[in-house]
Structures are given as C-alpha cells and as structure tokens.
Amino acid sequence: MSKGTAMSHQNGSDDTPQRTAASQTDRGAVDARGAAYGAIGMLVGAILGFVIGANIGGNWFTSFSIGSLHGYEATAWIGAGVGGILIGAVTLWLTQRRHSG
Image 1 (cartoon, rainbow, N blue to C red):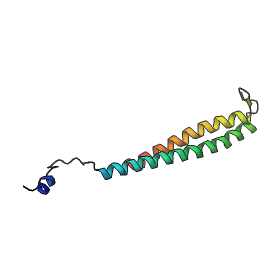
Image 2 (cartoon, helix red, strand yellow):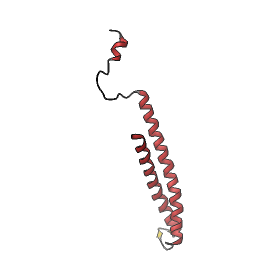
Image 3 (cartoon, rainbow, N blue to C red):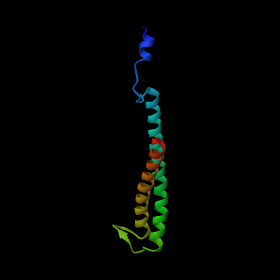
C-alpha cells in the first residue's frame, strides 16, 4: 500500500469532524473579531451611558452624591460603567450566538 493510500483511510468510518489547521485559524479569527466587537460595544455603551447618566443626574437626581461627585457628575460615571458592561456583554453574547450555529 502506498503512503497516499494509507493516509486516505486514516479517518475510517468515524463521523466526527476532524479539526484542521485552517479551521483552527478561522476559529481564532472569529474569536478575535468577537473580542473586537465586544470592545467596540463596551466603548459605545460607556459613551451612551455617560450621556444618559448625566441627563438623569442633571434633571432629576441633582442632590445625589458619591464621594465628592454630585448630581450629573456622579450619575454620569455610574451610567458609563453600567452602560459599558451591559452593552459589551450583550455584544459578546450576540457575536458568540451568531458564530456558534
């Protein structure tokens, strides 16, 4: 039996997909793209949360304070943190969901 013939029968009747170097590279690219989308989503969420938090603190919670920050200053930073985490997590979840199926 030649070397080429022996290698063609290596997988046999096994139905499980074999990972190749190309599929590993593609999976790494998908993971990197998902991480980039998550970082962009986090940045956009932080900016939107900052603006929305400043609006809420400046109009309705003017006496709210955290440490030395009062009103819109305090709620803007809370909004930036919450918005960044939520939008970043949702973006990662949607990216993972899209590429897993």
